[in-house]
Image (cartoon, rainbow, N blue to C red; front, side):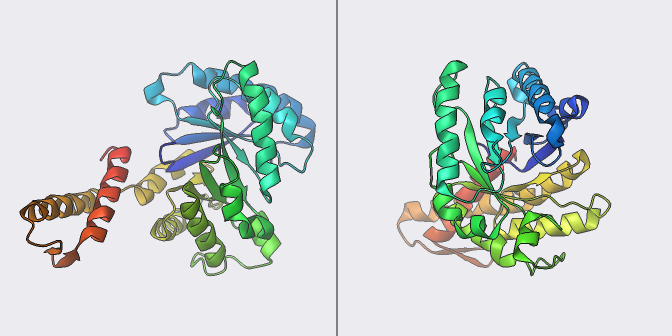
Length: 297
């Protein structure tokens, strides 16, 4: 899956909002069956989300975001019905909330194994992104991320007053001190598992400066992107997580100058703009340039 710089939530009970989300320019859209949907409206939401996925499938590939659904959690008793309603052509991935065990993820994978053939989908079409919103989930991140090849990413519930903060009993601040360990652990273990780490939502829509500050911290830690709750958060988040043209230009020089010297066989260590470059830095440069290519830079 390509890097998801922004994944925009859309309530599954609001068909017009879902339709607009699909055209908002986010990397991905998360059609939500969980927290934004009242219990009494779950069945209605499933039907509306299924219709939104059908609409997305008809969009031109070049303009179509990655289409995902946040189902209800494995412990709710609603997951099987959610998947039965939404697995179809046009669905790319499932966000599994409050993931806490390997069994929850492999259980979902087994349901997908049965549902995909019924809808004419190749095996493994629908991918999984576990969401870590409890202390137990954070503790088990690596093993959950490695539970099945369907897992392609992770997402931490870092929102202010969200489930993870509640479970940890900690405060929340823009400096990020209170959730720094959890954020770092999810990042490290996701990278070790070979999947992309996504940060959670920033819930204060009126604090644009705070959102930009939080995105900057998240990007410095190594997150590839984050979930967002309004289209106005898409552009600043994309800027924060994408490779800047300044950085891309520097790393192009690193690759060009290192490769030129390497061909001579004289040395494997040079300086570019006064900075040491050896094979480690050269590999880093190539990785950044690949990210820039995926971002369209």
